[in-house]
Length: 268
Image (cartoon, rainbow, N blue to C red):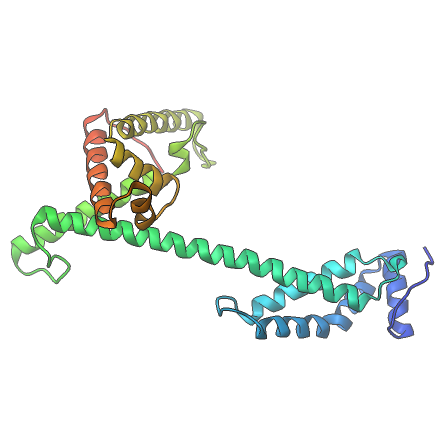
């Protein structure tokens, strides 16, 4: 290409750029990255110092800065006349900010999921305690009756959690064939699993449709839209405790409805 290389750097660096731009010399590229790595580290440190929260560690800032530097080297066009250092600094800052935005969104989603599941478990625990008429079931059991109560308590919670997983599973809630990822499954086994899964999905849909309107809306918002109980309460105009009660009632009806239907044998 033999184009004029417009740099503020030394002749040696200009030679590296010529080798990279003209011949795609990987060794020249690596050397350019090494030369400008301190710039990436400095920008990562500046952004880290001005951070608004401590959710992301400096190592993550540095990784994002390195990504920005590599992209800068690969996409730099010397014919545009912009010094590489200025061009790279802009792209590195952008890579850090964009990466942090994605990391923040991911952290927020994880926190929201934890809050949703925590509320769900609390609701199931309260329902199990209420049904057994005891508030001390989480203490170490003493005596046969206490152990039986604890077993019943844990069983109720486990069934509720299993129903929750079933309701959350997008493969169960949308139309289309469930995916069989088992490489060892024979065509007969694969067909059987898909058939049983479709039957279970149909039973679940029918059971949800038979729920009272408020209970059905709680199931829809909480499991399909991933809305926490507090927000569901605001949407329905009721208290959080009422939403928790509706949630327990709905799961109980779904459990009974599925238990009365024909048996399904689904391997997960």
